[in-house]
Amino acid sequence: MAKIHILDENLINKIAAGEVIERPASVIKELIDNSIDAGATEITIFIENAGKKKIGIIDNGCGLDEEDIFLCIERHATSKIKEAQDLYKITTHGFRGEALASIAAVSKMTIRSKPENANEGIELIIKSGIVKNKNIVGMQTGTEIIVEDLFFNTPVRKKFLKTEATETAHFLNVITNHSLAYPHINFKFYNENKLIFESPKVTSRLEALLNLYGYSIKDDLIVVNKKIEDVNIEAYFGNPKLSRKSRDRQKIFVNNRFIRNTMINAAVYNSYKTLLGVNEHPMYIVFIDLPAEQIDVNIHPTKIEVRFVDNIKIKNILENVFTDALQTSEKINPNIKLKTYSVAELKKEQLSNIALELEQSSVKKIQNYSLELEQKSDEAQQKTENIELAITEKSAENLELNYRIIGQINNLYIIVECDDGIKIIDQHAAHERILYNKFMKIIKSKEKIEAQMLLLPLTIELTQSEKILINQWLDVFEKMGMILEDFGGNTLILRSVPLFIGSRADDKRLLLDLIDDILALGKIHTIDEKLHNIVALMSCKSAIKSGSRLLVSEMQEIVEHILQDKDIKTCPHGRPTFINLSFAELEKTFKRT
Ligand code: ADP
Ligand code: MG
Image 1 (tube, rainbow, N blue to C red):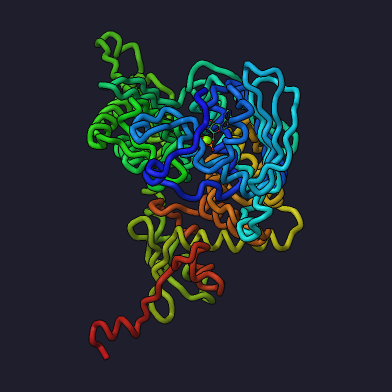
Image 2 (cartoon, rainbow, N blue to C red; image 1 turned 180 degrees about the vertical axis):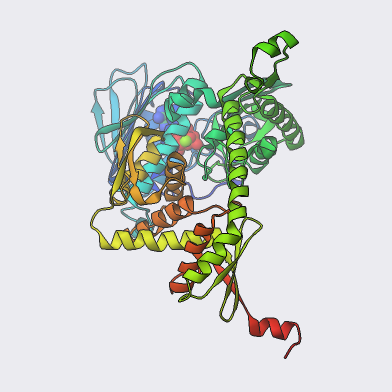
C-alpha cells in the first residue's frame, strides 16, 4: 500500500467534509472500509453494549509500518489520493483521511498493526486523539483497532444515542451491506462475544445475498446480468410475493459502495409498474459497476450518495434493463397455455375438465381464486335475495335499538335508518374498531389470550438485524397468543395465533406486516404502546375488507355496535367509522323548514 501523507490545503478545500462519526455504527462503517481498502479477506468485528463500550475490528490486510501508524490518526492523513485529479478516479472507499482522526478524537483507541515485511507489530494507545503509549507486540500481518468508551469526552453526543437494539441492528446493516458487496471476504460479527453473523467466502453476490436473506427466496428472485456500454448491471428483484410494507430490503451499490439514489429507486418502481399493490415495496438489490471516472463520490459527507457524470445515460440504461427484466419475467407473469383438443378427445373428456393447462402453481392459485370468486358471487346473489326478508324480520326483533338497515352500497358503506336520521357506516373502519375494542377487552381481562396452535407452523425468514429488533417484542407477541420461536439462522417459526383473530386474516401476511410495522416503529418502548400497535394491526387484518359484500347478520353486528358502544367513533388509526345525516339536516337541505 502507498504511504500515508497529509493532504495539502488546496485539496482539502475540494473535499466534501462533514460529520463522519455520528453514532457507533458509523465507526464500524469507516473501519470496515479501511480494512477493505487494505486488501483484507478476513474481517472480524466485535462490539459490547451496542458499541458504546467497545467496538473492535481485526483484519488481515496490508498493515501499517511504524511511520504510518503514527500518521494515520492525523487529520487529512491518507494514502489514497495525492492530487486533485485523483478525486475523479477513486477506487477506494476512503480518500479524505478523516475517519481515524475523528474516531480517535472522541474515544479511547488502540491500534495494533504489522505489515508483511515486519517481524513484530506496533501498538499505540490513544486517548482523545493523543498517543499515550507505544508498545511492540507479536501479531499476524494486518491491523487491529479497538475503540472504547465512544463519546466519553462529548457527553452531549453520548446522550442522544439510540437504544441498544436499534444500534446493534445498525451495526448489522453496515456489516451485511459490506458482505453483499464483497462476497469473497469472510466477515464475522460478534455481539457480546457471541457470533451473530458470518458471511462465508463465496464467489458470487447471489450466494452472499442468499446467505443474508435465506436460501428459500432463491426461486422468487428475478436475476439480471447485463453489460451495456461500460455499465455493468447485476440486479436481483423479488417477485411481488417478497414485497413488504417497509423498504428495508432495497439496496443499491455503485462500484461496491452502498448508496441511496432516488433516480435508481424510481427506475425500479417504474419497472414494476402495476405489479405492486398500494404500500407494497419490492425487494431489490442492485449492483452497478462502471469506470471510476464516471462517478463523483465526493459529494456527500458520509459518502452515502454519489453523482453520475452522465445521469441521463445511466437512467435510460437502467430503465430499459429493469423494465425488460420485470415485464418479461415468467416468475411474475406466468404463461398461460391453452391446450387445443380434437373432437375425438372432446368426446372422451368431460367438458368441465378441459380448461387452462397451467404451467405454474401461482397461476393455479389464480384459477382457484377466480373459481372461488364465482362461487362467492353466487353466494352473494343468494344473500341479496334473502336480504329484504331478513331485514323485515330483524327490524321487528330489534325494537329496543330501533334501526332499519337500508342496505349496503358500493360494497363499502352500510346505510341505516335510526330515530333521528340516517347513518352511513364505513364497514371496514367500523369493524376494525369493533375488533380493536374487543381484542383490547380480552387482553385487559384475561391474563393470557387463548392461542390456537397452527397445524403447520409457519416459517418466516428475516435478516439478523430484523431478528434482533423483533426479539424485543417476543414477549408482547406471546401475550397476544402468537408464539414465535427463534429457529436459528435467519428463521423464525410461528406456532400459534390468537384464537380471537378468526379466519379472515392470512397468518403469514399478518405476521410479516406486524414485523414491518414494528421495524418502522423503532422508538416505541412502553408495553401499552406496543400492545396498541399490535392490536390495531391485527384488527385491521382480521376486519371485513372494503369491497366485500356483507351478510345481513354481518351488517347487523356492525350497526348494533355503532349504536351501542360509546368508544367507537373512529377506527384505531383515527379515521371516522360513520357519519350522521339527521332528518333536521335533510329538511334544511331540502328547504322544508
Ligand atoms: P482514508 O480512508 O480516507 O484514507 P482514514 O482516516 O480512514 O482515511 O485512514 C487513514 C489512513 O490509514 C488510510 O489512508 C490508510 O492508509 C491507513 N489505514 C487505516 N486503516 C487501515 C487498515 N485497517 N489497514 C491498513 N491501513 C489502514
Ligand atoms: Mg477510511
